[in-house]
Image 1 (cartoon, helix red, strand yellow):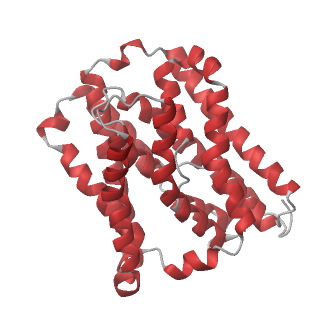
Image 2 (cartoon, rainbow, N blue to C red):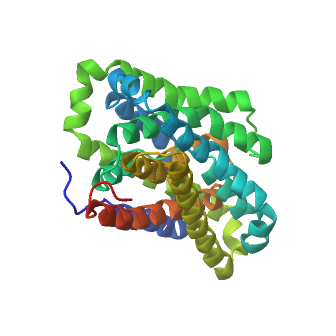
Image 3 (cartoon, helix red, strand yellow):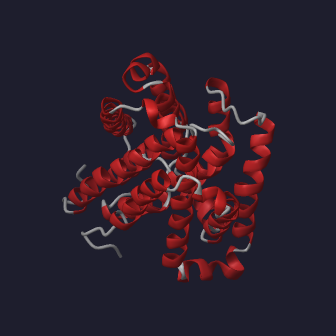
Length: 325
């Protein structure tokens, strides 16, 4: 089904993200003038509606069988990662500052990504059905777990209570997702048939969210205190965190006696984070927070890092002798 060469939509999308940041620095008032926030609110709901259209009850039901693999991935995603960032808060804050630490903690609390995880697991000859299940269920769990983590350790300064955040997440993410799942049998074929167009739409909405977040931060001059040393340190910390999580999940899955295919799925899905969910949740959890651009930057850098590293690893694993990992 998949060849031993992976062609990810990395270049165009990543370039668009950097272009959005550049435009935000040049025209920081553009988001307000063009009412981009209102557009992205509708866009987020559409993203999760189309995502639901591609998700069937049968896939969810069949995925429940391999529960040990699912538990490991979800514990790593929502428990181990946030705890690691919390434990190293003094060191991280001293290197990159409190604002970037909040961004890293927000990253750590996010769910796993969907599409690229499935593609890479397939390329690496892993357990694809379990990858689909875990990536899908992770997004649903994240709607509840991510804001709880943030509310416990980070002040959002958005004037919204945790119940308000949950309500908005339910309306903007869970409701359209549920409607999509319910309509899967009737019009789910439309989402699969137009998957490339939907993927383009998803990325366009993310680019607009990035632009809006950075416009707000630039207008409030929150980047004034960011140094080159801080940016380099942030990148190195993210690479270290990603490598640490990959190694941890691999070793634990080996100790638990997982099959080779399950070890690959656990390693890939347990170490990834979703830029889609991160962009959507940022707008809700950090509503009107002038530092939103700073919080989103670690998520963007992590997204780029995981794509590059896992694409390389997946290609190497795809060319191995089956049964070896």
